[in-house]
Length: 235
Image (cartoon, rainbow, N blue to C red; front, side, top):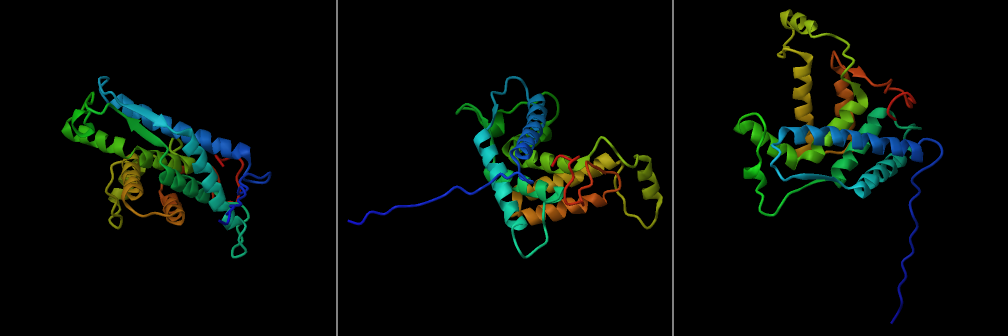
């Protein structure tokens, strides 16, 4: 009987140029921050009697970062384009895409606990309760949205104030149906979450969506993302 041997070698991931271990650590930490924001928000919505625990698998988070780097390196190393270093749109797209592939977050509850029926909320009606159940089921997608948009946009630094909304609504050539830019942002975030949950989506599609969001009249960028590399940003 012939013996068969399998030879393999590890794919080089980190380098000393752009895809450094320090930069990968920053992305990992920022994912953790985005996860904690969502976890705390959902936890504060639930009644304290709900026996639900949240779990972030740090091994899968590490795989998320590694796979994103490998995917971006294929573009950087390709002779078919002139990409030397990925800008922040591409970074946010690949990182959020691989988070969606690995889904590092899980929720845990007792076997006799019916997630659809036994969830209780502190305030709100039945629709609010059903919304919470849906959010728990899609927590990975919600974290990915939180990561992608806050990686690129500084919502605390609003370029235009809500008074501009009234001016837009008065313009007879403008179909602006929002009372505030915050309301507009929520609608766009809900739509992005829908895409992440129910649509076959690739990094290039996420990248195009995020680039399109720069046309929002009030959102400040966290850095000059159209440049190849911005050391002042979250990259």
